[in-house]
Amino acid sequence: MAQTGTTGRRKSTRKTKRLLSAGQVHILATFNNTIVTITDSQGNAVTTASAGASGFKGSRKSTPYAARVAAE
Image 1: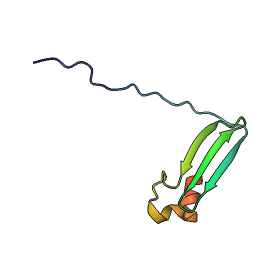
Image 2: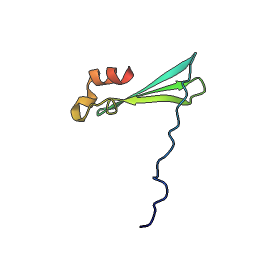
Image 3: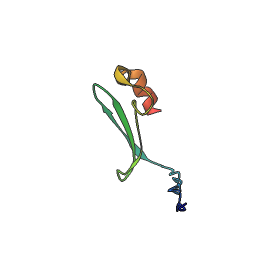
């Protein structure tokens, strides 16, 4: 039998935590979803969250509660 090479696993890289002293919160509220992006003072995106990524699907993504959960 032929021997297989590597298993194809990737090394995982850890993201470093960035402490922000000042920043901005950008909120995009559409009829179907709410997207919240937090940026630093230069405008570089630090993190992004949305109602869909928080686990809400379908018509529940457009509710005010889903927007609040995404903002947390």
